[in-house]
Image (cartoon, rainbow, N blue to C red; front, side, top):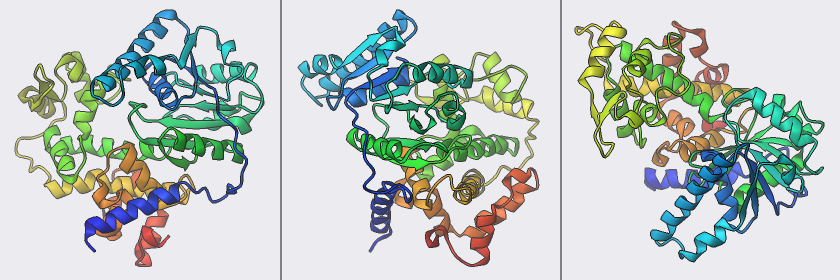
Length: 421
């Protein structure tokens, strides 16, 4: 059997395993979901709504301003019309699907929903305010869900009188396209809410993985060290396009600096409180694709090319000598990816993920990790965990946060892999 066939078998089995939550009985009663409420008509709220409208489930979206509703519904309609023009369904289907989505400015209109999904921006005070209000509006027995990408679901649940009904549903953007759904179980989330969320995910065509509460959950928590190390590589003489090229050669569709340019370098930017290179780029109005300049220069078709100006800024702001010998492609790859595996080992040890293959599913279907290597944990087994541990010890000299996870050390000591867990 070829490696590719082995990987395909692994992915199939990983997807099957992800549907099983070991401590939730198979015969757990499901909460019927016949009407969905969504708070927020932005990119995420609109995309989430489409998933339900697509399968015939009525959705009601609530916003604070009519202009936000109008803008959000315009985006939804545009998405449907593009799909119809591409032949995915007849043009008359656009009106049918749009007809399943209603709107208002009053949260009281969500009272009879079976699930309400909050999809506002990542601000804990705002989310707590919304859930406190929902608690007094939405019928008992309904699911109260937050589309947070990394905030504490237990803290959100604590403002309600029914924490057992609260769960995190982390959809990935664009939510009407991306397959992954991280289902974040809180400390008090009931079995029925977990099982019903898994069933709902399957109905709307999502690949769901149940995870625990921690900053960033599984996907974003592991992404963080990769982004940090990509930035550190610039101080060692690598250029953004070197790092991106290596990760794309590995199989990712996009490198970390291209991803930053796509998101916008000014998202969350506080001048003078972080990366001096980012400060310089934003001050020069190099804020990413939207300004046709970020880490890269962009033409009118958003085609990226390396920027001599950015190369000069890196040397100046990060004090990089022209005589510095830049890291090799292998060094770039291992410096970006090995810390992710180490973080994955911590996630397993803390019980945030049930099994290594769940982590692999998150990364393959949420972050486009190449499926032919089976995700970060399976890939780490194939390259050798002793190499991962050695890199963790090396990086741990700069910060003990990178120190080898105890689980990783035990596996190396016992000559075992993540597949043996």
